[in-house]
Length: 261
Image (cartoon, rainbow, N blue to C red; front, side):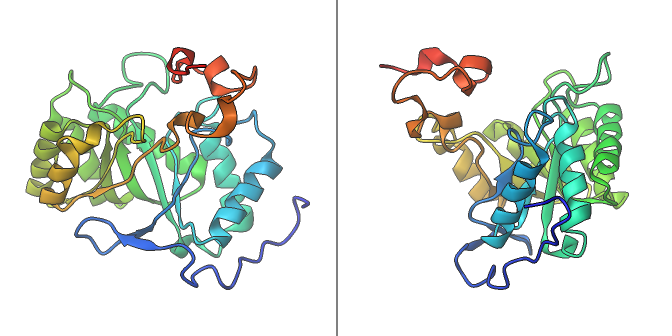
């Protein structure tokens, strides 16, 4: 596949192979499987491979592309690379895509480049839109709860993104049930519903089953899990030990001590 190949999407991509599920009580439905860009879309992965993944996903009915400001490596590179592929391959298909991004983890040096302040979230969204080459994202997330910033400020920033036309919907990630309920109420008071929550979830990490799922159901908020394969632990990747190029060997977010012989 050359870089100049013209991408023609599979005409049967909506033939029912990929189920669509309503997101909370909104008018939006999302595919049962979404494409996340946490790994494989930084500058350490050939652009040709990234392009092939995005094409294959869309051909299979995956219409949700999920990013964050600091996905890479380096930070921001996933949005730059995806933005290029969107322009070159998907420029006529924007209205068929749900594109999301997030801010909350560290992104740039200094006190205004992480967590949940209004300054950080809105500045980060502007930068994300520039990297992606978009006028708006469909979903903008608070990527993590910030105990140092009033929740009203963080949710106010999300609401402002919608009011400014830079995001159509808003979401949160990795919030506790109680904080989720408060966030939803604050947003509702501002006229912006909480669309979706993105928690970690897998067979090895089932924390959301205790209270969060019931809370989301009660609030009418959608749920999309990340790391459903526990970053590879639920595949055959580690059957014969820990490969040198694996996440367990090089990524602090996956502890090799979790693996047993």
